[in-house]
Length: 134
Ligand code: CO
Image (cartoon, rainbow, N blue to C red; front, side):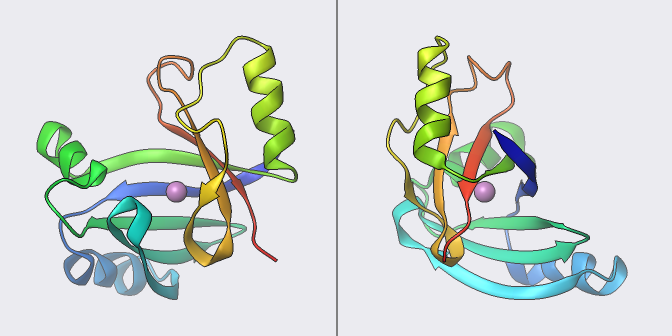
């Protein structure tokens, strides 16, 4: 069902502050920034091998990422696994008794479709399923 780790999401207070560390100090290749209005975040993607690091900066105080930082501080926010068919993956998880935050896929960065598994089911790790956009 899962094909690889697509990205690890990291909550940051400022992309401008965080990007130089990942791009310059760690030498990751920077793939650009994008605002995901639906999730009230600005996102920066950086390539590392076949996976990516997704930096998430909240764009408003009621952004879920703003609430995460308030509660936990900046740091690892979620892990995203790539799937070939996100609707099938959601159906499989629901059929085996798991809870989804998103029972229907929604829009992620770069034309992807994403859905989050409820952390109660994924043992405390916020887990995203991600189907690449075409
Ligand atoms: Co993500």
